[in-house]
Amino acid sequence: MTLYLFLRPLDVWLFRDGRPFDAGSAHRAESLFPPYPTVIQGALRTHRLLSRGIDLQNTKAVERTVGKADDFGHLRLRGPYLAKSDGETATRYFPQPADAIADGRNILPAQLNDYPATLKTSAPFAKLFGLEQPMGKSAEPLWLDEQNLLDYLENKSAQGVPASELFEREERVGIGMNERRVVKEGMLYEAEFIRPHEGFGLLIELEGDYASDWINGGDLLLGGEGKQAIVEVVKAAPLPQPPASASRFKMYFTTPAYFEKGWLPSDWGIFFKGNVTLAAAAVNRCETLGGFNWAENDAHASAHRPARRFVPAGSVYYFEGKLELQNGLIQQAITDFGAEIGFGQTIIKEW
Image 1 (spheres, helix red, strand yellow):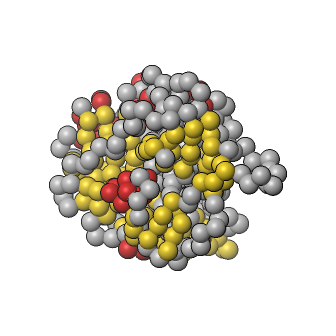
Image 2 (tube, rainbow, N blue to C red):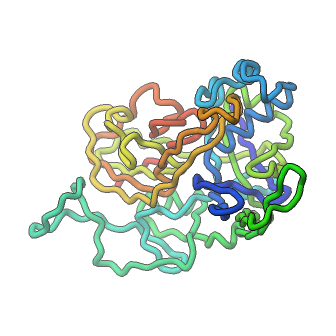
Image 3 (cartoon, helix red, strand yellow):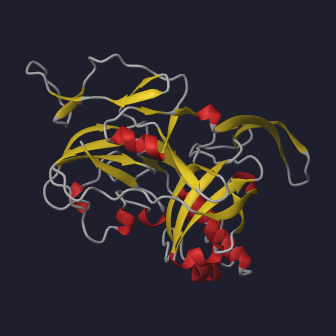
């Protein structure tokens, strides 16, 4: 069973990034939006625990019901994606590709060129992004709906939408309190919340055992402070499959990916058959993510997930060589971690 679920906010959302945060020295919490798949899988697994009356402090009971922290069991999740829903059908929105040349709302892909004969470089690429065309920059990040992204990846002109037309970032100030609910002196903090515009929320694709929990929709506590989302079953277009055959192809990451060597895996052969060569890459600044494991005592070091640096969504990789994905890739994901829960989702097109 596969369901498309639209998460409609009832209030603002808080999805903290991976930086330390407490009232005092590191006093500002910024939000990543859309949140990482770990946020959604955590919310879904916690919902299952609570709906079945499992004590969250009972480690063995938690593991029997939803597995260990990075053992995702039967959970198969794609997303989350920023999306707009009319109540029946949802349309995804994707971050501006990292190789884009922007002119206001209009964007085009940068052209790849061979190295000039006089250029000496240690860059591990066969191609360079050309700079002879005038480079533009939008006043704020652009987002592309599904059709505009596909047009862009097929080297057609496309249009983006400023983030401010899809959601707002709100700053709120609070103050730390002790166990008696008494204010602590000098413990001010600031948190950044996300307020999606009317009709906007998050879209996820859920398969298998967990999908049966949401056949009739429901509600879900999501992100920091347990803000509520209404879960609605909707229709959505599946993301396109990779071309049947291509001698050159580019790969746009629709969700973040983790690689052992930072922005590179240890071997592309993990994901592709035959011999493929990375010709160029446009990679946005890495994002750091940690987390918390409810199955562990919060005083234990293993209760805190290790911090990992991820290749963010919107990054684009160009390859030369025959496109043929390895058999057995979980959800056809290109990532060394989290393929089961939505990391490493891509759209692949010829170039």
